[in-house]
Image (cartoon, rainbow, N blue to C red; front, side, top):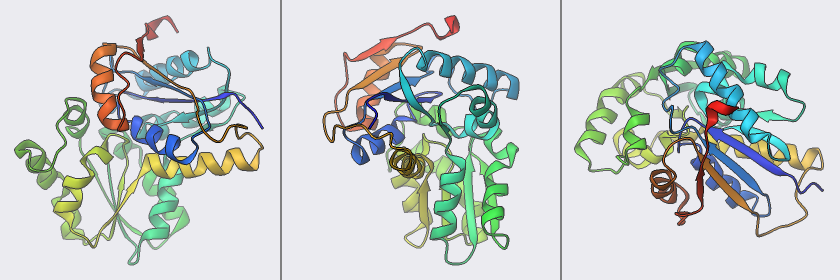
Length: 271
């Protein structure tokens, strides 16, 4: 048993979709979350900048006593996971492999779709992983650069004209390709799940990269004897690089619980 915390980071509030699942699956675990809201989105940045930001995010999290780090960010998982894993002695878990495995397990036809940030799609990491697991898979991928700022501004509800316009524009190729499974390759995207599902229809299975990642975290903790002895009452700490009040308001929606007043703003550039 291990009572150290699990560190989780993302470019903004999107990674809280993974944290919500982590709290549900492993309620006894302590969690430290950092959202880099002052520099969101990462998906439009250059690779070197993303690596720099990711290193700073991990350095901040490692100021706590951690047993694992979860990269709840598709962009960082596709560009910096190997580097972070080499530079840190504790387990570093990304979202790509878990989501790809979940998609391969779910598809009936081998026609798999992928949505993500510009950098995630350009990396080809998801496609390579899916095809390694299922060589015959037909993968259709598309960048959706406006989804992250949309969600970060609280615009994700079905019926919102802007949401429906962007969903239809971005997802039309997946209807044409007749995919039966769609990987939400960014942890912001599950907030748009209802709008995406309504557009694609009931025949398409949506894979949340954050939720799939939590499955892997749970398996790792069990296999390595790292689970917390507690089964309930884990402590959860939240940090952001921009306004704590703004983060708290939106994060409360993501988490389904009020954390206003529980968020601290930190100067990530000092790490």
